Length: 195
Image (cartoon, rainbow, N blue to C red; front, side, top):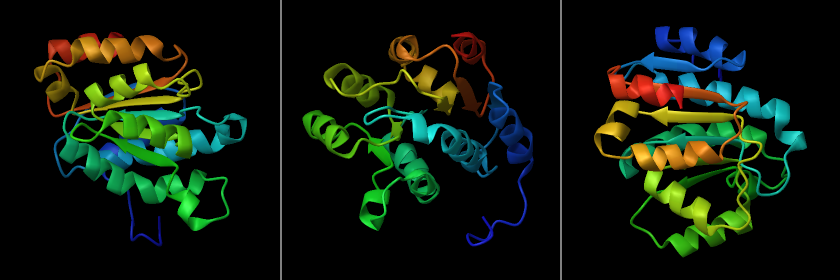
């Protein structure tokens, strides 16, 4: 963190990181620019660091779901340097394969093949593409998933992804941490938090 220029945690990070690291679910109301991405990326690395040795090839340790391709790409850009710390590989080019971005607008078969080849530990995705890859991939396993992050949960629901999110959540282990990050806490977000 020092090397990347981080001096102190923002309020949302200070409130969220200890809870996620101590096996608690969180529902966070935070606006853009509050540091919320690192509020879930840093605990993700800490959580997966503890369990990465027991993970097998094609086990996914964390899912980060975002409503748009652009936001997913931004999250991936922030998360990738931190996720590299989880790599078992010696080769630097292999360390970039710890996290994978899955969004629409590309060939889903290529995403399925890339997952099979690279076996990423972290998936950062839009809901439709994540669900599509989960259904098509014979290798992908979420049985050991430690963390589910729903970023901009209010937008995910407002865009009509409730059924897709419920399908994804139904495949995940009950003993995982869930983080819901939203600009507003609506009744629908509260309902999703209970899922």
